Length: 91
View 1 (cartoon, rainbow, N blue to C red):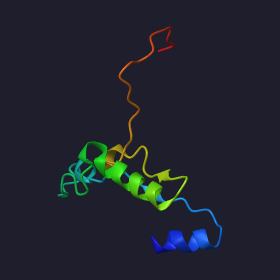
View 2: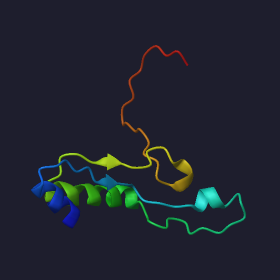
View 3: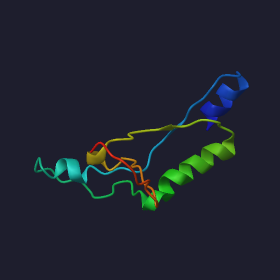
């Protein structure tokens, strides 16, 4: 985190990038190429959470969550809820 320390000393803003994990397994299987499943395992969110905790502990007040919608790379973040509102729907 030397870059973060330097930026902080200069009173500049710093936004680190965090990501949930990575796998080209889904993307490559249709092209005939081999790709390791879970090259960087998501670990049920622990990998992403660990990065966030490290940055918060270092003092950052914002983060960028990378690859929010890259399903084929295993980096997607899906909206989830235990209780979904019920009501009129246009779908």
